[in-house]
Image (cartoon, rainbow, N blue to C red; front, side):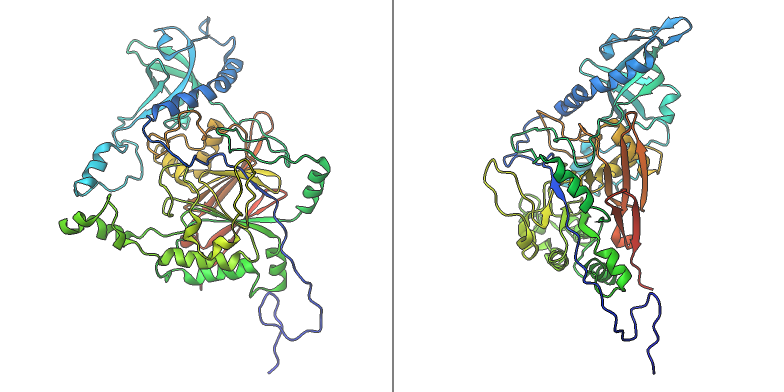
Length: 509
């Protein structure tokens, strides 16, 4: 029986035609170390300094926007006046002041939840939202001098969470509440051109990057980068068996390697210059967690520092290491940790240790001496959040905890709206350290955005979504919500020239 050739099928009749030899497009890649912590970490200090550092860095920007918008503004013949501190607000006087938002929400997590876990009491289930159905939530504005309660209609139309810096205009009423007339945020920070990304702020001696010194090199790279694509995947969810979505993972591997595809698709795949894995690569073992929390007194007594070594299962990381080792000979990989991955829980999560990947670490970076710039290998384990330069674009990405926590503060379900708000707040993790665990920084708040990214992606989201936002000075940011692969079977492809995003779905029929 003759083999019939069908368009788009893997089954073809023999052909005498010559096939084009495909090569993988090279990746132009410069990781920053903005969120890398010192080797020796200290946790004796308090978290309050972070809010003061954030306010000190962002207050000049929001005050400039507020003064330009409200200069000469009048209500009933009274001209608005600026006050320096929250406690300088006077009753009945039209004024504006800048400060930090604090949300007083009864349903937010508290220390009693942790105590109940320590004493083997059944802890309350995690809440989807912190919003109180009875309307007991309060919006506060605070600075180093004190705190002021905010009320008014504009609050209902403005997305606000703990930790964002804003300027508010209005008057204090007889009850001591500040009735808000208008709100301003810092808006998008300055943005550099492609191939000329500004140096990230140096918070310690090791955080720096190599600049491109030759303009001709920039021009050459912009030409050679034409047509490249960046693949972003999140929530791979490797488990002990991977029985639920092992076929989808195999299809993903074959797709990225260009195996078992028709020539047209192979041509497209060869344009993928880098794979970014954005968090939650290891599935949360709920069975082990429940087994650990229900344990008896004898089992609890044998635990050291609350850790039970017998509950550890190395199979998920072994499967993940095999997956990475199969990709790395042909395509570079950037690995961002997530909430369920074997990394520290508090932000910024540090890179997953290379010891977890005995096969993939052979493709990692070579050791470098002190003072030398780190040259990334094909396998680059990075922090969460992470920022860098890919194909000349400034890129910022997270594993998803920042958006998931902001989601609990607001009624909206719009994840892209939350990402846009973070960009306009100039802070990629505003709720840290209030409800999002964070390292207690004392000298600088690295979550503050000193420069505007061209691409901002967030992993482990319920569904794929993308949009482009613009700033007052012509800044443009491509926002991408990356879905969980274990649930959707989808990865995102980003065009390196236009930053347009598309989805590839893997499904077993």
